[in-house]
Length: 157
Image 1 (cartoon, one colour):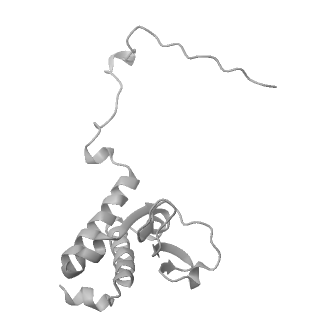
Image 2: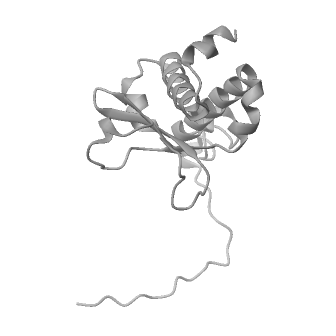
Image 3: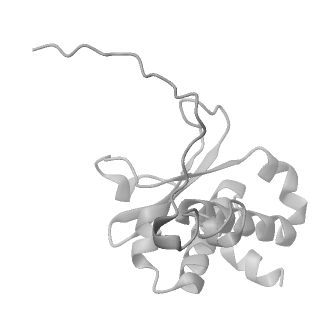
């Protein structure tokens, strides 16, 4: 059985606001743009950018090489077999937390570090732990891309 679609008619009257039982107009609890209105994905993106900023601060001489590197966030890793043996993968108990794609991705020609949001959030106890995990993954993969030792990052403090 085939369903016919029909055009949606636009009303000429203004949209109604509900004022049920005199309690006031219903609306968002917080206006768009305030921190309360940020999604978990947006907050996670900020953590990745904060980690990148800190790397650039510590490894300033490598800023040119870091400039060629793209950073991306995906919700979950793809279903690829034998990821634990692939180069450029940060794993926790067999689950990838991040990955370095030296040759880029389908739509990005330059090297990309991808951080996987849901596996990191599942392992984090609180917001500080989540920030630490994101930082650890980004620094580990950036160090691998730059050919640097993680001890170099600690020595830069």
